[in-house]
Each structure stands twice: as C-alpha cells, then as structure tokens.
Image 1: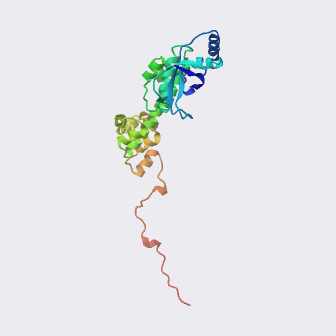
Image 2: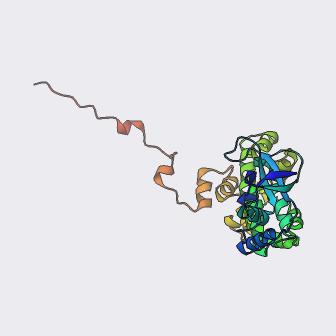
Image 3: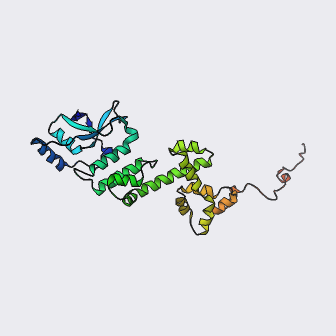
Length: 275
C-alpha cells in the first residue's frame, strides 16, 4: 500500500524517543540518493485525533525514514498498517505508544534505557485504570519487570492512594459499589476488593505500635484528612479535641453545669415616684 508522505503524521505523544537523530536521517538521505530501498513505514489509521475532523495516519515505526523521504522530496512511499481498521486515538494512545516502542527497540536506532524509562512513565501516567501491568510493559520494552517497577513505582503509588481514597470516601458517603465503579472506571469486583481490604479496626493496633497518622494514611493508601476522619468516627467533640491535641476552648463548650437562675438577669423592680 502506498500513501503520500505529507499525509503521514509524526506524533511525539506516541513516539518512544526523546528526539529524532539527525545523523541517522542524513545517512538515510544519502542511501536514498543512490537508490536504496527501505522497508515500509508502519502506520495506523485513527479518528478523534486532536484538531482533525477526519481519520488520519499516524506513524508507529519509521520516523527517521519518513524524515529522509521528506528531505529527498519523495512524495509517495510504501506503508504497512498495524491494524486494518480505524481505531479511536483518544482511547488507544497508550497502546499506540507501546506498539511503537516495541518496534523501535529491535531495529534502527535502538531505544536507550532513558527512552524506555520515559515511555514507561508516560504509560503509567496515562493508564489510570492500570490496564497494563508492569510485566506487560516490561515485555514490550525488552527489560525485566523489576526495572519497570523501579521506574514507575512512585507514579502508581500516588495514583493508587488518590484512587483508593476516593473509593473509600464515596463508600462512606453511601454510594453503591456499582456507582463507585462507574465513577472511577474500575470493575465492581475490584471496588469490592479495595473496600474489603481496608481494615480500619486495626488503626488502634498500629497506633499502639507507635505508628503515626502519616504512616497509617500511607499504609491504607488514603490521604491524611480521610485517615483522621475514620479514626475520629463516633467520638465526642471532647474526645476528638484530645486526639488532635487541641485544648478545650471557651467557645467549644456548649453545655454548662449549675447554670445561674434566670432571675439574676431580671432587672430590679424600682418604684418611680411621680413628682
């Protein structure tokens, strides 16, 4: 299949390298000038691409060849489609990046470890539902799983804490697990697991072991305010103040013992003699 070079789009969001290697492009230009033939570019037709109303062609593999074709004023080139159907760009950006990375690690300018790390972190940031496991990402990038874990552990931990806190908060507000699942984009089964794994009755045990609230919040993957709200649930105001280390202030006291009789505030009856 042939297509015009100017119809192909170089998308940095799904390109696994930080930049195009100009030296590689120049070598390809020289090769083309003496009649060299390169393998077809790998492309994918997509819809819902930013600022494009119609379907367009994004390049998955062959950016350096594509740049060389442009510089040598070659108007039409051979291409090979990855999937022989149009896919939604907005929904498929992560998989497009993974596919591009897998192709670029095996030939041409090999991906550096820094390139692979950047790809892994891009995927982790975009894959909020954790559709792609660390093992799957590692296989695509040609590295061991523990390497990917080291690259993205901070991102996944932060996402997990934010997501789990939202799930627990909604659960405590009375949302059904089905409603929560729709709100956060996870399966109902996964929501059940997350809510069920939270053993808040063990907070007192952790406190008795000398753990502070920062530790407890991280342990349950929730934020500090939510951790405190759970710890103080069911306590009186006075008990909450004590737990928080607040002193009881005058305006916090809403009940009084042995109130003065109402009469003491009644004005004295005085006789006014008429002149």
